[in-house]
Image (tube, rainbow, N blue to C red; front, side, top):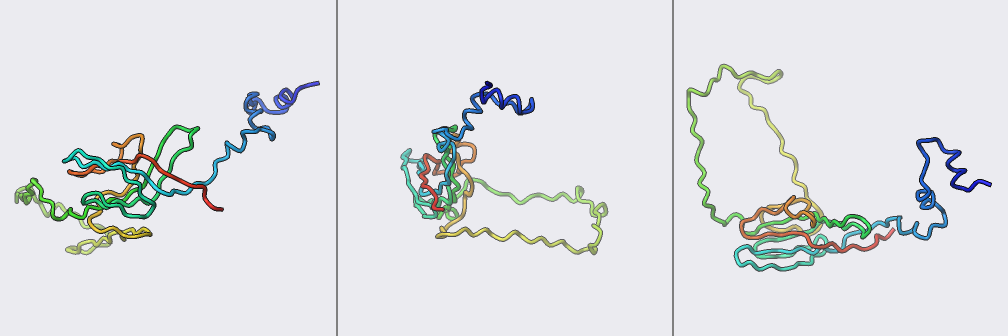
Length: 193
């Protein structure tokens, strides 16, 4: 009498032959089959570390989703976060919006000069007119509409909107002369179905 593994290998084409371990993992009476099924999770809060580069002091902030936390002149609003399960490579990600309330009043040492135009470099006779456009008519472009996300809206200038990764904080970092912010942890709960 042939074993179940041998019969499965005889019936399957050569490309689809599974190892004995794969066959055992697909068994209906597998006690760990439920652990392999991932359940849907929804984010509850994100833990961030905020650093003041001038004073060298940091603070850990735990912020609920779509709530606003204040750190110095920054207003930080997490939109979503995700944490991989323990059996996978550890990674925590968060989508953040960071606003600076004192952005307009900050002085800069950078001096902007008006560009110099040299008449010899500009030749107007070489310009071409695109088909369908009249001469002297300037094309108009519509700017995309601003994205408004749900929840309370922070004040100030939006200086960061994007994903931050706990394993590689420098991959998509906040660029600010005084403050630094990075992701530490994400808390989630089972989604109600």
